[in-house]
Image (cartoon, rainbow, N blue to C red; front, side, top):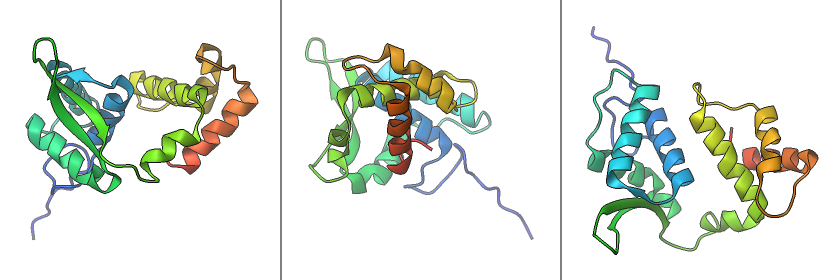
Length: 167
């Protein structure tokens, strides 16, 4: 009897299954907004290096289609477009419809969303892919807009966890 390997990182998979490689890529794309194609390819390779060094890097189009098949039910998609000035290819995460899920961002104030962005950057820049709540709370002094006390930031972090924005 032959054992088949379990692929939970970046290796072969059936369509519509997000691995840690895909999740990190999506988080990076969310923090950066619009990215040129060469940056997207670089980020994809970075995600494989961090999570699954042994897997062959999936073709970018297949990689993005796989993520999009999971995001489909949320009416969100990674779209490829072109810059207006010189037509360079760019990618961005776009909202395809107005749903309760896509409206979730309006549940948070601008400074709360800024805390989320900074928390994601901290997580992504870390060697482990994790950030302690203490380190995230220490970011409150760097927030734009209305100031936030650490106690408020703690409550916002709990809300992010409840809404499954962070774990």
